[in-house]
Image 1 (cartoon, one colour):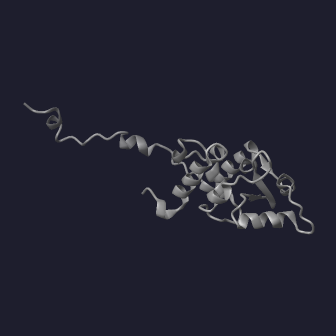
Image 2 (cartoon, one colour):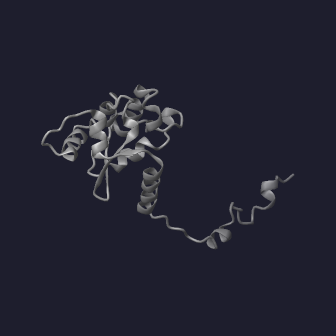
Image 3 (cartoon, rainbow, N blue to C red):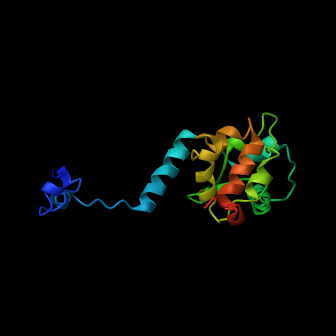
Length: 165
């Protein structure tokens, strides 16, 4: 008795989806830069952002003759504060501040693992992207609730020696 497979030994194997169906499928190119711009624009629209003057006010810092942007840029360089540049404006995501106006104490620990880039968007994207390390939550959502898990997620995502690969 022949098996069902051996009955059609001379026929071409059938693939799914049929290869001829794929040839009619239009090729769509997705520009990664355009996708990043759209994500950035969505974040700018949907999240709370602070200007340098608002951050200085929250931090309750007296800056006599110093430029607030220069002071905050120094905090960014030291990886104590997260900020971005958009159209020559410095902006700071509000999630990193506590209710008393201070920077969340775990921000430097998290930022220690992230890349230091001129514009800062790569790290902002990470904070607003769901991650399996936080059971599908965004690091920005979890920072106030469980800061140590956000620190661990940053280490796993950015520290090559901690890779799960």
